[in-house]
Length: 257
Image (cartoon, rainbow, N blue to C red; front, side, top):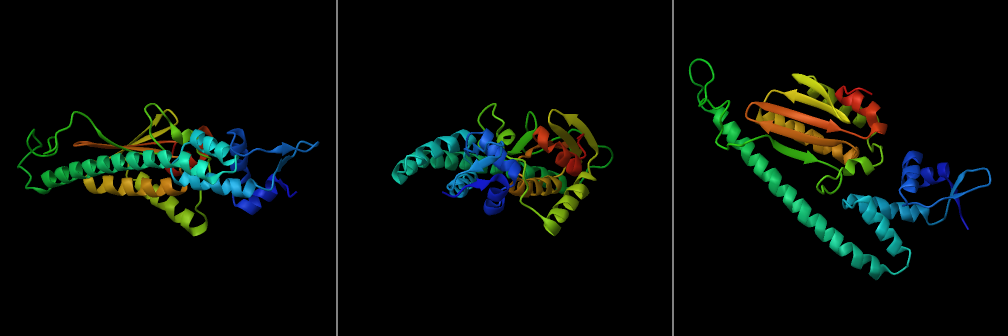
C-alpha cells in the first residue's frame, strides 16, 4: 500500500502543505500519524484532493464537500451524482441571482454616467446638477460583493478558504503592481474588522475597473472578500481576509499586518 508524507503529497498533488493541513483540520483529508508524529496519507489522497478541488470550483461549501466525500466513500457513483445534482442546481440559481444584481448595478452605473456626461451647469454643484442626484435614485450604496462561495445570510465563506495563491512569477508581480497603482488613487483609507476600506472618487469607469480587478483576484486568491459600494458621491472598496492572510492584505492594500 502506497503512503505519502505531507511533503510527498504536496509534490504529487500540487497543493501546498498548509492547504493539506487545513483540509485535514476541516475533516476533508484524513491522515494517520507515524510513531514519530509525522502525517501519513493513504494512496487515495491524490484522487481525493482532485475531487475536493473540483467541488470547490463549483462553489460548494466545505460542509457540502465533506458530505459528498462521505457519500463517495461508499463507492457508488450514482449516489454521489444524486447528492451533487441539487447542490449544483442551487449554485445555478445563486449565480443567476448574482448576474441579475450585477446587471442592475451596471444599469445604475450607466445612469450615473449618462447624468455626468450631460452639460454641467454654470457655477457650483446643486441638487439638480447630476453630481448628487441621478436618474436611478437610491436610498443607500449599491453593493457588489465578490466572495469565494455561496452567500447565505450572515455567512462568511471566505474564512473557510485556504490562504493560497495560484499566481506566480511575472504574473503575480503584474497583479501586485495593478493593485498598488489602483490603491494609489484612493482618497481615504480606514481599518475595518478583518480588513481595510478604501475610498475613491465616484465614477462609473473607476468602479468598473475595481470590480474587474477584484473579480480577477478572486480567481487566484479566493480567501479575499471584496465589497464595492457606489453612491452618486462616493465609491468605496472593502477588502477583508482571514487573519492568516494579514501579511498579503497589508502588501496589496496597506492594511495593518
